[in-house]
Structure formats: structure tokens, C-alpha cells
Length: 288
Image (cartoon, rainbow, N blue to C red; front, side, top):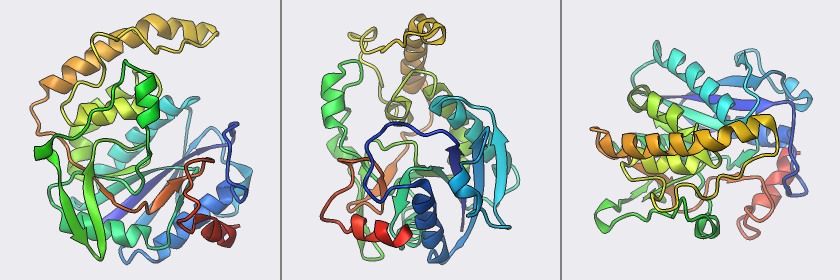
């Protein structure tokens, strides 16, 4: 097998609270370290929304590809990244795994070697993640998107290369997908990105043939922005939510299985999401 990393980045940043050792160069160095230790072929394609961050320019290697897109938002840049991935998939080997990577995640050194082992060992899974956030509080506060727990018959547990992997309902926009599933699901992945933030939560539910949005609370939690573009989206979002609800239940493909390690092998670099007792701060100091 081989892994094709689509590393999505842009020159801007946001006001999220970060760990003290955070910078995007440290995050990229952690991925490159995991790439060296993977034991399988890994290619990296930087999908750059308008401009590469200055701190990453020196870390781009001669063998890396750089594709410039015009996105402007997380959802639009994700759709552009999907387009890059499917163009690569048209010529890549059938056993390729595509890893969609946001630029504010850090990886353990064995992250990709463990991922490759799981991909080889668990044929039933089409999607993989290395990080599972606890979004229970968010779902409790947003009745339009209640948390959809796994049914008892959907559970899957397997030990691979010394680590326990299990089926999960959802993750973020940093994930892996097999080539065949990517080509089959591209339209649904695009549709899921049109329903408003957090679009990834809704998309994961849809991929598993569940209803992402509660019909009773369909018009709740729209979070309109006080801008012309934001106000235009207010009537559009309920329409796209209805479409996603209908399409997800009408799909004829089996529900997709998303697999994750019990212990995170990657982490989203926000304060409150980095476990203090898992050694991430010590690893972070190595990547600075």
C-alpha cells in the first residue's frame, strides 16, 4: 500500500487557544517525522489556499508537490482538496490511502506506521482516523445535530500491531480514506461540506446512512454571520440540510466504517484538546 497526504494550509491563522509550544512548523515537522518512520511509501501534496504560510516554506522538500487553490473558507478549501485527491486517484494504485490533513494537528512518531498496519489488517473499514475529539458537550447544546451513538451491532474492536482499534461514529476533517471509497463517496463528501459548520460532523453521520440533522430542529443552530455572504447562507443552509438528510438515507451503499485507535496517535492543537498526561507537551518541545 501507499499513503497520499493532502496537507491543507493557508497563510492566515485564527484566534484559537493553543498549547505554548504550538506553531505550524512544529505541526508539519511532526508529520514529516511520522512519515520517515512509516515503513510504507508516503507522498505529500500541499494544498495551499492562495498562499503558503511563511513558516512552512523552508520545510517543503523537493519531492513534495504544491497545488495552489482559491478557497477562502474551511468548507470551500476542503472541496478543492477533494478535487486534488480525486485527480490523483485517477492514476494512483488501487491500494492507495488518502490522508486529508489540516495544518494544526500533531502526530506521534509511529502514527503512520500504525495507520498502515490497521489499513492492511481491517478490510471492513473504508475510513480511518488517528484522533477522536469529545464533542458530546457541543452536540448537547445543538439540538439540530444530536450525537448519533453506534448501535450494538455496529461495534468493531480489533488489536493491530499492539494497539486496540475500534469503530467510531465521527472525527474531524483530518482523516484517511481508501481510494475506492473516495471515488465512490466524493459527491457525498462535497454535499456534506455545504451544510454549515461543523460540516464534518454531519458528513460522518451521512456516510454511515444515518440522518445527520434532526427534522424537529432543522432550523435551529444556523449561526448566521453579520455579513452579506453570511445572511445569504441563512435560507440556503436548511435546504442543504434537507438534501443531505434525504441523500444519506437513500444511499444504496453499505454504511461506511470509520476506525480509530483507542489511544490518539494525532492531536488537534487547541488548548483543552491536548491531554496533559499523554506526553504531547514533551513531544511538542522536540518539534520546535
